Length: 136
Image (cartoon, rainbow, N blue to C red; front, side, top):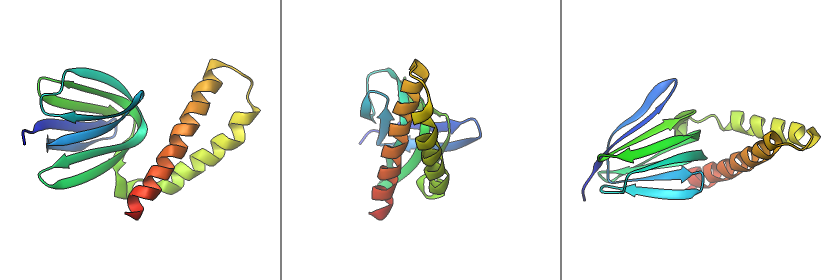
């Protein structure tokens, strides 16, 4: 199977660099998979799991948003934060969710409130995904 170059970076670190057979991304408009030869694309990413399949290995990383760009046979994922799933602080995510559940209902209606509600939903979905993924 043809491979392509992948880099997953965040402001704090270079999280992953290497070849991949396939990468699954949590796109803002829905999940998407990237294979070698994919059409050029730029997409926003929501909080979720990035799955890199390479040479029989399956590595998972948690991101909390960002953008991805595929062109010229290379995928660049620029994440707000990123870490291998085994190193992700689930307790911190749970605390963030609990804090948002307390504060979001007290705010007045606005576009910012709509974004926070959507973000809270993404965080809850991510929390569920991590629970299911790590249980397998």
